[in-house]
Image 1 (cartoon, rainbow, N blue to C red):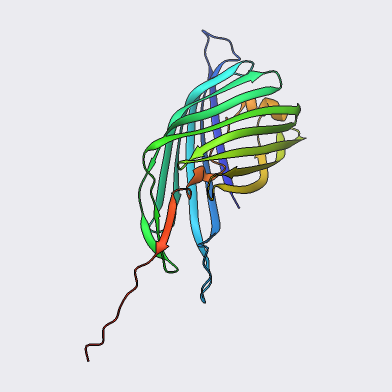
Image 2: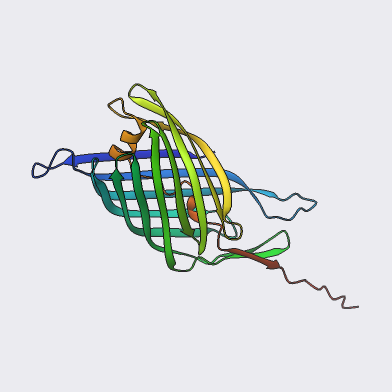
Length: 242
């Protein structure tokens, strides 16, 4: 189950409207999950693997118009010696009534670890390449968002469909969210969960999305497993000297 921590600060300047702010937002996502290698052995196929991701945004925003900023994220997966992936690039959002156009694009890079799991040699080739995550969101009500988007992570494309429903609870909000992806190879899946929003005012979901922390693009853990390939490990021959 994911644990997410989000913090943000806003500072308005006298030279511009008080509705226009500069934000610094930092988030941390920790996952303790089971990884399945795809092959069943007498010892079982599931292995508990730590997966953690941290990211940040620095951006300008006018909640009535748009957001422009910079995004960065680092992901670590405790698999075959450690899979490390980073993403850096510009991000933007455009607010058009009940429609939000949003996305981030830039450079993806990482390491190339390799190891043997259940008789298979597995390699994750996280080369330097382009990445993007884009959404077109529509708010059916002030507390219900649905979106369609595109993901290009780890060199693979995927269609993304998702939504979020917010339940107002005074100054805080609880929401239910879900996202599904259907893409190339093994780049597919569905996940969901519960989010908690905190603040000084009672706000609807659409206002929280446009006035508080920006989109958490790391919810899918950046496609850290997309680059993995497996081949049978070389057989070990034991020669009897007699």
